[in-house]
Length: 314
Image (tube, rainbow, N blue to C red; front, side, top):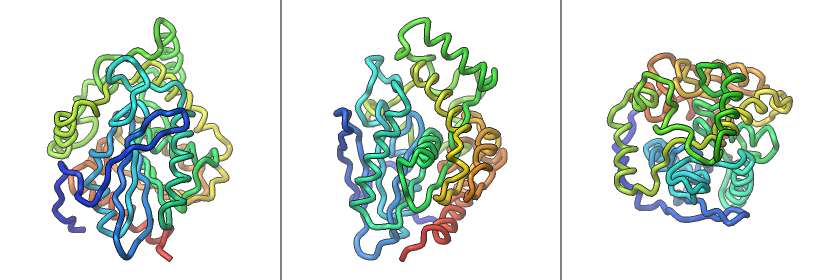
């Protein structure tokens, strides 16, 4: 694959950044990049915890160049969307069901307003929420792609004890308070950059966007986010509906991922009746689509082949 040059630090001229309001009045920042003329279909791309859509403009440009209309929104409590905690840039959520509710209504409106086939792509927490929404029947795309999906949290104590400790710590004060000081998990010797990507230039793009507009910066999660993440991933792993999913799924898993539990992801994905899994070794950190070219291009090629086969244009 020979990707075209693309300015990762500029909103494309034909794209539009606006707002969408959830049923409870929370404002979510949305990104729309339509395609004129011949269309390949429509993609709804959802990032991970603390993400904003600017981080993925390069990947979105790849699919847009193939004729796909692109849509995305920042999850409530992060990026350019309304914050739901008084603790500054803390990434808080009361219940992961709120994320699912936003996705359900937004996706229904998106599908009604855009041409098919419709594909939902989710990275990390977004991958977890997409799979959970599929299992609960909240979304019905033609195909789904999960990238480094958060189907288990990385914890030095294991999932069960990690959840117990999180509930204990959360109970010592306001659960909406930051769980720790830094953005990513605190119990690691790795730098944030090495946890996310081996590509220093793509990593720097995120910092550039945050420096340009500090309002989109999301810091550490709240204790309640941590508690909810443990609970939601545990319940999804045990959900019997996974065995009956009829939406074709492609999952990209980084086996040495330092942020999410790759083994839990692989075990969960093995239960899906129509899922293809692509594994990456130590060459890939968590943000597969923002990795060095060799990794990123391999991932995009796999996604392209999957979409041609499982979500073909009529």
